[in-house]
Length: 369
Image (cartoon, rainbow, N blue to C red; front, side):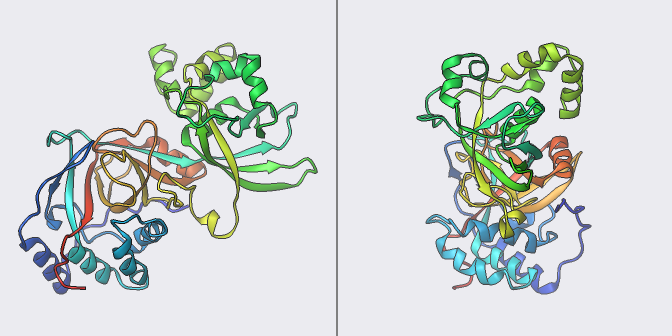
C-alpha cells in the first residue's frame, strides 16, 4: 500500500529548472477569482511550500485518471499530460510552470481560514453472501426510488419499521458480522469485501457507493464524546466501548440517521491497484486523490497540498477527484490513504492544518504550444 513519503529536504534546484520557475513568476499576476465557496488569490510558484521537491510520477498516475473524464477546462491540456507520463520530473515541472497558474484557496471573503485535512480509506472486510448465525448485518443495494434527494427512512427506522424492512427485502448484497464494521464502510463510502459464497468459495469484490437515505450525517464518535462515554473517539476505542456496552450499541448507531447503499463491482487487474470511483467518476489514487467541496475547487483540478502534521507532513501535488458529506468549506480536504488496516490507521490519525493552492490553466501559456 503506497504511503506518504517523508517531506524531502529542500535541495538547490538545477539551473534550468530554477530559471523556468523564475520566468513563470516574473510576469504580471492574474485577477482574483471568486468561486461560490472560496476566493482564489493568485500566487507565485515560489510561494508553494516544497515546490519541485515532490515525486511527480506518483501524482501523474492520478492526473491520467482525471484525464479519463477531464471536462472542458482540462481537455486541451490532457493532450500534454498523457505523453508527459513517460517524461522526467524536470520536464513535468517545466510544463506546469509554463501552463498553470497557482491560486491560494481562501475563504469566500478573502480571509485565510484555518484549513482542515482529514483522511479516508477503503476498509477490507470479510462477509458472507448469505445470512448465517455469525453474519447477521446486511449491506443493501438502494431500494426502489431512493436517490438521496428526498429523505427516506432513517437508520433507526430501517432497523425497526416493518415497511422499511419490506422495501429492503431481497436487496441484501452481503452480510457482515459486526454492525460497527458496517457503519465504518458506510462512512468511508466504499470498501473491499472478501465474500464467502454459498459453495464455500471466496472472492474479493468492491462495494461502491450507490446512494444514501437523504439524512444528514452525524458522528457517532461525537455522540459518544457528548455522552462522556469515551475520551478517545477513534474506531478502536468505539469498538471497545461497544463490546463493554452491548445494550447501548443501537443507541449509538441510531445517533447517525444516515445510511449508505451500495453496488457490487468486480475487483480484478488494474481496478485492484486503484481505489473506488470518486465524485469525478474516476478511480482514486492512494496518496494523490483528495475529496473537496466542489464549490471551492472543481473536480479534476490539480492542487498543491501543504500540511505540517502532526500525523503526516505533506507538500505534494494531488488531484481533486471526490467529495463527502462532511467535506464542506473553502480549505477543507479529505486525503485518500488507500485500503486496508494500514491505510485505515493513517487516515484515522489525520486531523491537521491545511493550505491549498489550485493550479489552473493560464489563459496564455508562457511559451506557445
